[in-house]
Each structure stands twice: as structure tokens, then as C-alpha cells.
Image 1 (tube, rainbow over the protein chains, first blue to last red):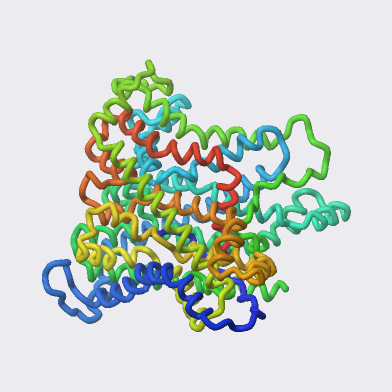
Image 2 (image 1 turned 45 degrees about the vertical axis):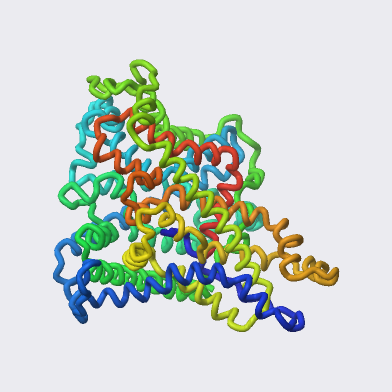
Length: 309
Length: 301
């Protein structure tokens, strides 16, 4: 399905001064209708239907049975859901801060004119185009306990061998590492753009006033990056809460369900166990939680921004 | 996502669709050092980031027996095309590659046509219901795809589209993000250009096709790259909608390898190379545009 990042900040529509031309309404709808039908038909309609389904029990073949709020009440007593929620939160807690820190570090390092900078940028950016399926196969290979490159390096360094994806305590860490490999480019490029937008004059002025590089970074540059950080943090959190592809391509939820995430659970519930109603209920619950997280962060951030102003 | 109308302004937010990053970095404040200490950070990072690729290529050219070597080696014991030969002989990889190309090409073409039309309509034309329509589009962005999988699957099953390659394409025909991206771009174009066309007697459609679209190439390239990355690498939806191996996409085919051929690593890596190299080559050719595209993905907020 479409997994585009979402535009969030539309500009205010520019006032149009032209006279209203007859026939313009028809032309207008002619321009927008085809896309509107496709996008609306593929999102609004299924979203409403999913809500209806979440109050029913249905396997796709037998007649649907209305069960009221039973699916939603089941959410609270479902041990696999609790496990999946914990794994998802664990992954988010590892991935998001690491991704921000890595992106900021790499952007700072790449934002200068030194030799081979083009090569460095390419090295960091090119994993971004690799699919989760290919990344998954690479992950399984690199982190194989018997012949993987990672354990091989450990062997050379005389460090103990690890079970990685086959160890339920480590599998999520491996998935986080490989997500970072694939996604580092994203936070890096956004921080890079933001860094290049920091007014040169402000940095110069601080230097003339005698600030050292640490002070410049901490007192001048970092405050400018705060809104970007909040935005990227929220965006990466939403992405992290929806982890599926890499889990499917590596562990399929294992070992011992240690990498079962919410979306993976939705997929198995709906398409393996054919519980369309309950699957839709979990999906709606996830939607509500992510919406709540987004709203909470946005409100807090806006308050903080108002205070500092 | 966040409230679409009011989010803290990111300092870089205005350049959607425009190259944001590839400009040369500002000249450093101090004189350039003969050796920058940043190399000490960047070189190891670059090596670590490129190692998986090296391993992928080397393994794809290794004989299958290398895997049992103790201790395992990084460099193949000899270079061979066995992995590729088995890949092409024993799997439908060429067919899957073809399917994926079809899905991506149709998705990109449809995205470009539908989203630029709609983006232009929302940016420049006045018609009753415009605000409501655009708000509806923005609202769909907040809906997560997991919510849509079950009903979409059921509808496709009813229409007999499941198992069909068309099933992989339909969700990629247009997107709210694409409409938004194109609208942003058209809003940034000076309206005077179009006024001139109108005065010369062009119809709306003629103005759009002859005046506006030729100027929209950077935005359309950005949209094309997003659509390519998304449709080429999509896994969840083909996984749900396609069961027939004939109609697999590359990504779906790759993941089926894993269960059945877990030990045949040279074949698996050959498959990875086939699935990944087209995008890597494109990336290297159009790196600037790619990076700008990535940046504009973050600048929507």
C-alpha cells in the first residue's frame, strides 16, 4: 500500500484575484476528480468499512456476526497483543533516539568541504534505496551465528560469539541496527538541510563574541534545529510503530515471538487466522494510539515554543 | 500525523520539490586543513555502511560450498556465476523483475498524470468544493495503511482482482502525498506566466500542458522518484494481494526464497543483487535529485 511520508503543513491558500470564469467549476473538477476518486476510493471508503468490520466477527466467507464492542474488549486481555505492543515500544525506544543522534552526527560531519565528501555522502545515502526484503536477507546473512560477517569479526577480536536473530533477547537489537543502516540517510539529509539553513551571520557573530565551537553548536545551532528534531522524531516514531517489512523479511516474528510487532500481529490475525474483525480492531487501536502520540507531542512542542519566544 | 494546518514551521519547509541539499556547503570559517579530523569519523562510517553491499556482491559470486568453510572467509574462494545461473534457472526472477518494472512504470506514469492534474486544480483553479476536496485529501494522509489492508483485500477479492498483477498496481495509481507535492510546486510558480497564456487565448488545459507542465520537471522528477522507491520496494501489499507465483513482484519473490532456500546463499544474494542494482544505478546517476527528494520528504512538516 502507499507508504508515503505525509505532508503535514499546507500553506494557506493564496487568494486568487481573477474573476470567476463561467465553466471554471467544471474545469476545476475535471482536473481534480480522477485523483480524488482514486485516493478517496482507496482510503476513505476502506477506512469506514474497517471501522464497521471492527465491530463484527468475520472470516471472509461465513456470514458476518455483529459482536458489538467485543473485539475492542478482547484487546485488553490478549497476551500476544501485550507482547507485540511491548516489542513495538522497545523497538521505537531504541530506533528513534538512535536515528536522530546518528542523523545529527552524520549531518554535522557531512556538512563541510573536505576531500571525498561525495564518496562519504553516497556511502551513507545509498542504503536508503534498498528494499526491506533485500535488507532482510542481508541481515540474516550478516548476523548468521555460524558464518555471518559480524560473528566473524567478533571471532577475530576474540570476543564471544552471539546468537543475534536466533537469540530472542538480541533479535530486536539486530533489526534496529539494520533499520538504522537503511534509514540513516533520511534523518541525515533532513538535518543537513536544516544545518545549511542556519544563518551564517548568527554563527559568525557568536564566534566574534568569543564562543568556542562547543558553545556555538549548543547555544546557536541546536536551538535552530529543535523544530526539525521534533518533527523528524514524531515522523520516525510513527514509522517505528508501524514496523513490519523488516520483521517479515528476517524473523517472521520469531524467535519465540520476540520480534512480533503490532503490525505483524495485525497481518497474522487478519490474513493468517482470517479474523478480519479483530484484525481491524487492533488496527484501529494502533491508529488511535499513534494519533494520540502525535497530538500530545505537537501540543507540548507548541507550548514549549511559545514559552521560549 | 500532526494537525495538518498548523505545525511548527520547520526552517526548511518552504522548499518542497526544490533541490534542498545538494548545494555546496558554506565555505568553512577557517582555512582548510590539509587533513580534516572528520575523516576519522567518516571513513569508518562509510566502510560500515558499504560492507553489507560488498558482502552481497561477493557472496553472489561465490560457490555455494564457501558457506561451509571454517572459518568463513570474506573473499570468495573463487569467482563463479553459479548463483546467478541457479537463480535464473530455478526461479521466476526474470518474470518477477518484469512484473516489478510494469508495476513501477504504470505507477509512475499514473502518479505523474493524476497528481499533477489534481495539484494544479487545487493550486490554481477556483471551483465550489475545492477547499473541502483538498481537506479530504489531507485527511487521508493520517489514515495508516494497516487499517486499509483488510477492506481493500476484500474488495479486490470480490472484483476478482486478487492474484492479478493489477492488484499490485491499483493502490499506486495516485496518492495524497503526490497531490500535495504537486500543489505546493504549482503554488510557487508565478501566476503571471499563466495569465500571459490566457491572454493569448489558450484554454485552461492548454495553459497547463504548454506553459505549466514544462516548468514542473523538477517536481515531477521528485514525484517519480518517490513513486519508484515506494512501488519497487513495496512488500506488504503484494504479500496480501498476490498468491500466484507468476504474478509475484521481485520483493515478494525474494522473501519466498528465504523459507525454501535458506542455505543457498549465493543464489539468495544473486537475487538481492538483481532486485537492488537497478535502484542503486539510478541512485548513482541521479544522486542530487534523489537526495533532494529525500529532503523534501522530510520537509512536508
